[in-house]
Length: 276
Image (cartoon, rainbow, N blue to C red; front, side):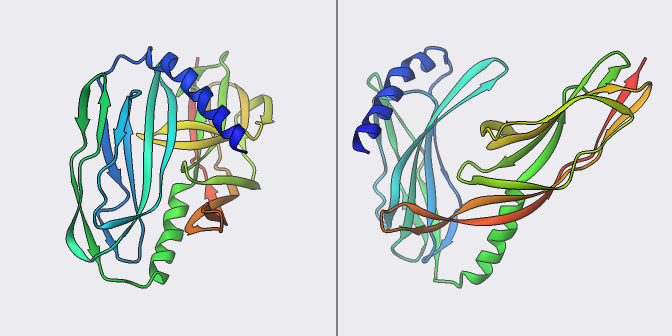
């Protein structure tokens, strides 16, 4: 296993310079936390994100926190309007040591070609221990809001000779794993001829949606031909999806445990005008 790990790291090192040679934006370095107020028995997640390869990364001294896990490194490469966009993240999970209104997390530092850049310091409010039963109920609701399906179309309007591509895409957070899904209601296409329809392979992609990055799966795709002037209608799809969600607890090897959650999701209805 160790040999495989070293090979992966080497490959990342070999390909990174090629990626950055295409990104001429100025260096950006930010720190993000999942919440600014936590209980003493909860876990704080903090990410340090930058958009170029760096020579040195120096984390802050987490004086009033214990490192529960980290640093975990991840690299993201997405395409925006034909341009390759790179970002690298160092992520820590922290447990607070003391209760207080303003527990300081200081500056993190990166260095590139002799130039240093720092994040802004943060203050985290740590409250007394609280019951996690209510928090777990809220977490279930939050999970449901984070997993959703969108019906996407290639055009907002088309003429009678055009074709319309329809994709049904499932979105879920980067730290979730998709196990399976079941069709409760299949897609229904009205006022059109289905030229082709097929289920996509179970391929996970990284996709940006409304300013946030998700993992996504196109589970079904269709190409439609208008029957005439009017409107093509795509009725909502209903799925039961099974996702593996991190629990915050670790196994004996130090890896986070995941639990399966079944969530029912419903897509949006889509109407596309057909003109002569």
